[in-house]
Length: 220
Image (cartoon, helix red, strand yellow):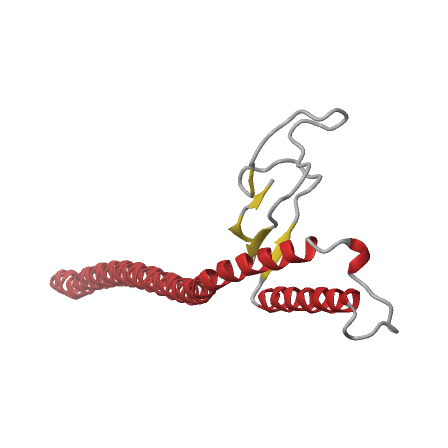
């Protein structure tokens, strides 16, 4: 009976450490599980924070790229505008230089056109039959003198016209054309049977243009 009791007591004493070991093992497992869960949460939180930081860095980089692209576009436009302004300045300078040259010759050209008008009157005053003479006539023959004089005046007139032409100045005769108040100066107007109203019938003074600009209106 005493032995049996001792044996029971021993069993009881022996069983106690096993229970504590099981409890310790369960606690250890729970701790490990909690620690692992915490580590996972910490890792997940870190990854989320890393992703957030990476997203913020990406957005900042994209913003910087957009700002630089806008600056590049602005500089490119400024270069194009500057180039266009420079080309316009060159063109204006060239035009002003040409206009200055045209203006310088305009006054002289107007004086020369008046001289050409006088030469034209002199040529028209010579009768048609006296404008040429046989080659065998004596040099002192009046017909030969008149013919030679006519030829000399005609050559002078043509020479002056050629000189004006080298500077872009040309004659124009509006006879038979429609009257244009921008280029023609009407001396008189009269109805003529068979002619369309507003048609130039006769030109008393030829007009002149300098490089497509009116130098002198034609008198009609």
